[in-house]
Amino acid sequence: MSHLDKILSVNLARPKIQLKNISDKPSVKTSDYVSKIVKAPIKLALKKPVPFKTDNPIIKTIKAPIKLTLKKRVSPTIEDSNAPLEANEDEKIILLASAAINSVESDKSETKFIELKKYNIDVMFRRAGIIPYFFDEKTDEYYFFFGIDLNHNELTDFGGMVNTGENFVDTAVREMSEESLNIFNCTSDAVIEAGKLIYSVDHSMAIILLPISFESESSAIENCNNICIGYASAKKKSVGKIENSNIMWLTGSDLKKLVLEQSTAVPIPASLQATINLTGFYPSLYKEVRRRLEPHFEQQLTL
Image 1 (cartoon, rainbow, N blue to C red):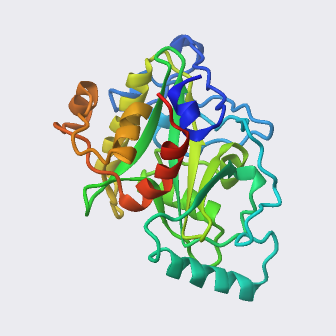
Image 2 (cartoon, rainbow, N blue to C red; image 1 turned 60 degrees about the vertical axis):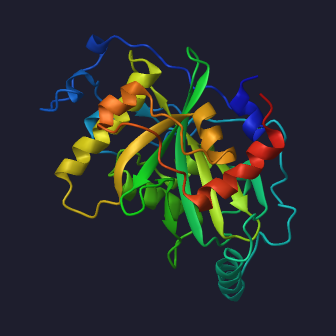
C-alpha cells in the first residue's frame, strides 16, 4: 500500500497510463510547439461517458475521471445531523448562514471523507473547490495540482464561494474551469462519479479530490509540466480575469510536508523550476485548505 492510500484511508484505483503511438491519431493543428505532439481528442470511457471540455490542445488528451472504490464505505444517509438529505429553502438559508459563522469559530473544524456520489449535493456549503490529482505506477507516486494565488502567493485549490442557485459541485467545477483557464474543465456529472469529498461538518468548506489520467507516451513529470505549460500559454492569450500566477504540481510526500509540518522549505523540483521559471521553495498552502486536509494526515498517515 502506498503512503497516500494511508493518507486518505482509501484504496484509490490507479489510473493506467495507456501508451499510444502518436501516429495512430490525427495531429491537432496548432502553432504551439508543445502542442504539436498532442493527439486529437479520444473517446472517453466512463460508465456514462462525459468528456472534458477544453480549448487547450495540450489538455485534450486528459481522460475523464475514473471510478474509484472506498476501502471503508460510508452510508449515503450521512450520519451527522448537520447534513440533512432533504432541505427546504428556509433550511438551506439557515445552513448557509451557520456555515459562514462556524467557519471563523474553529481553527480545527471536524472534517469527513466520503465518495462524492454517496453525498447529497444539495447540502449547502459556504465554499467549494477541487484538487486534481493522478497516480503514476512507474514512480509509485501521487501528483497533485494547485494554483498559486496571484494576490497572496499561496498554493490553493481551484475553488471559491458558492453562489446563490448553485450546488457546491457546480461551484467547484465552475471555479476550477475559471481559475485554470479551462486547463481543467469537465462536467459536474463526471466529478460526482469519480470525486472524493473532504468536507467540514459545519459546512464551511468542501474540497473535492478529482482523479485524472493521461493517454501519453510522456512520463508523469512531463505530463505534469505540460499542464503548467498549457496554463502559461492560456494565460498569455486570456483577456479575462487571471486569479493564479501559475499552476504547480506536488508529489504526495511534498504535500504531506506542507500540510503537517507547515514547512516553508520544500524545494521545487528542478524540472518544475525550469518549466515555470520559478526557483527556490514551494509557497505555503492556503490555511483554509491545509486545515481541512490536516486531520487526514494526522490520523491516518504512517510512513
